[in-house]
Length: 415
Image (tube, rainbow, N blue to C red; front, side, top):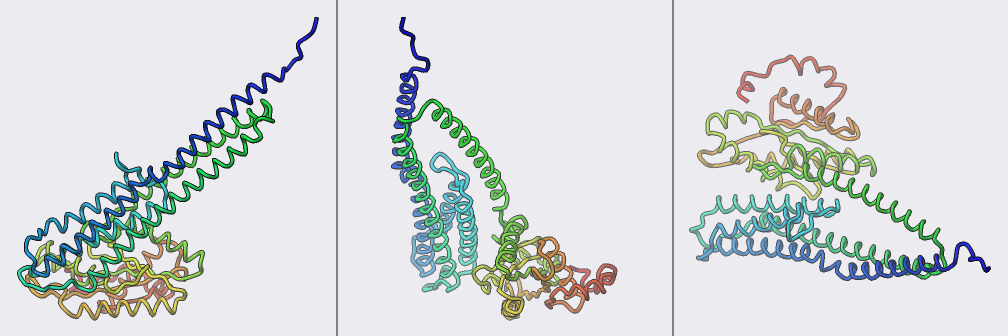
């Protein structure tokens, strides 16, 4: 009687044929997914175009409003910018119309755009509030126009980042398609062992993808927490400042450059609140923010730490360039503050004391730099206020007991 040979070749052929068919199905599915990539992410691109349209409409309506054209509703001007902010937040957080941004680069671009939108909307509100709408032929300020074009650049940056992201997604799908086509070419010549290896590799890929998704989710949570800004001034708050400062310190370490952290504190701000109320005090802080930002460069960062305390971050290639740039900026700000910061209910003048610590000279830790800058600012107040001091480790360690125990001058008790 004829015996059946063990391990009949029909079994691996059948298994190979089934596996090849499944792979072909996967190839067709990935090809379909690749074709639908643009459609999937088209709402993001459309949203950026709509954000640009809303910002442009707000700018044009405001220009018509200030030129004396009737029938222009102030609320609609602000509403356009509010709609642009809502679209940006929707892309960050996701809703029924948009996938939320999972890519860190997209989230950073979107957060920068959201920050610029909030700043531009606050500038629009301030401009409307400070302008006599009954007068005619009032032109937009050059600074306001510059802020608008900065906003447009941020929108373009986000749109470019989305397009790059979509292209990378398409390249990834195309690469996967090519690999699977090559796998199908050799699938007919492999055995059950090859199928087992494929299954194992697929399991490893799924596990790696799960781990990557978990890491991305954790990063997204951290980015979401750090995306908060100060509600009054629109500046980064302490949490966002910490994130930005760590990024800048990373560049200091990698590129061997310098960064300054300047602690700015208003002199005699408490009497303003006591005499005129917190609403006037808030107006002073907003006006000061606008004044400072007018003299900053691209890449300079201004944040509100708390109350009347602000932090200014600068970067340069050397300490000499850093000191020169910082003194020029502070000097221009002081010149502007020679005029009243606000005129109603009466003219109010302010000045500030400042202290600076430098990385990497003084420290590469944010908290330590903040502490050193605070000590330098305290010394400027002690020496007469309205001054700017750089932290000197030797001098400040020598006078540390005085800085802690010596009371402020009598007039400082009102701060």
